[in-house]
Amino acid sequence: MTAKSPKHWHRFLQLYGHAVFTAQLLEKDLANLLWFLEARKRDVLRRPTPADLIALINELDGNPIGNLIHRLEEFQLDHSIVSLLKLANGNRIDLVHHFTVRYAIDINENNKFADAIQRVNDLREPILTAHAKVQSLVIAEIERMRVDTEQER
Image (cartoon, rainbow, N blue to C red; front, top):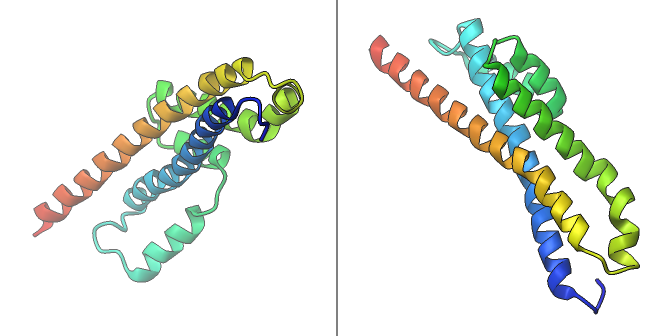
């Protein structure tokens, strides 16, 4: 860290870290959403065996966001959700793979944070929005499973 502006460093790292962390949560929640959708498609939620559940979890866990989004498209989700997820994934790729190349010299050598902080904010907003949307879809699937289970009793 540069001694000239620890306040700017902290703000930059806070925003950047939050964006990348939320992208990882998005990836996990996409896998969870797919788990519910795939399980319903395969009809394993009614009477799943442990082997059914483990096989599905192993199949989905560890897939990159792009692959998960591609699989979600099979379930004909609203186009705006898929578009948001693709934008969020593109922003994640930009943050993780390209951002430092663009801003490293300005931040490390020139102590210029304003553009980098603004860019992080611009990139992270769709990630935060997509994560919140996917979380709400997962919660809806949990509720649907609960209702279906109660109706079977």
